[in-house]
Image 1: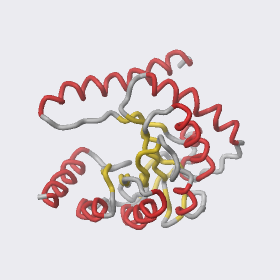
Image 2 (image 1 turned 135 degrees about the horizontal axis):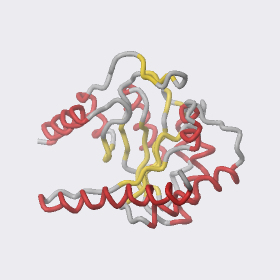
Image 3 (image 1 turned 90 degrees about the horizontal axis):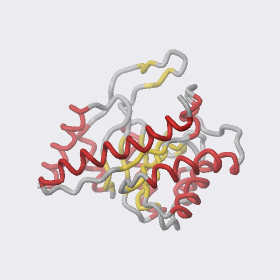
Length: 225
């Protein structure tokens, strides 16, 4: 598609979400629209979003991300979901841009244990967001469910901000065949511990469907009561 068509669809994605949010607002819940901002590697369609270190300079990353950030921010979401970021170098560029634009956002890394996908310690990775005025929450997504709690504890210690936790199913992505391998390890009974560790935004990522989210909401509602 053309650049104009792509820009129109990005704006439309936020508009549609806002329309649905407004339709559901009458039941007393506070609903937010978060516009997704993924990593550069996702556009390569070769699994690079799970590796990072694309060989781009900070200036090149800035030139890639700024137009999308400005476009999504202008569409009027409540916040930006800066997600599945695989390394702190890209995160540092994004955090600077978020502070310039001034739209609230969460920053969520895709991690492997206590390291980013690129291998940097999570403590160093979260440090890039600690002083940000735009980043209102930080955490992890699209990681194994068992990696969430240790990562949240690091995020809270380093940033002092509310946490973000939405792992994938724990299955592996084959970028060659574009298929998922293995069986799901998404366990909703882990979620109360994520909330206790400071997570304010909890959900699921790849291969986590509506039934999983419904079960998650039920578990959290019972834990709260």
